[in-house]
Image (cartoon, rainbow, N blue to C red; front, side):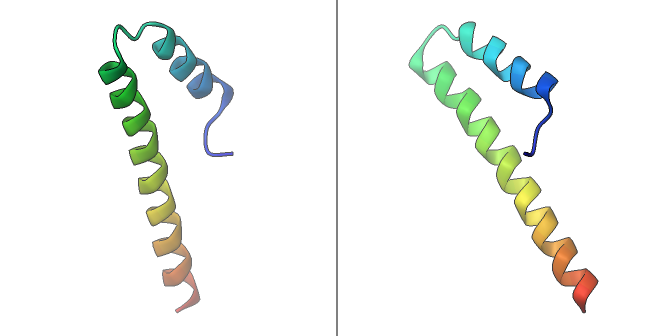
Length: 51
């Protein structure tokens, strides 16, 4: 799991505060961007460690 309980709670709280579908979309896009950045970082670290 990438995130701890505080991060998940924060996202759930922000989701309840969304005023529109656009705002919810931006929140979800941020979550996806952070996941993608974490994945890329781990892949680069793993490839650097093996070489």
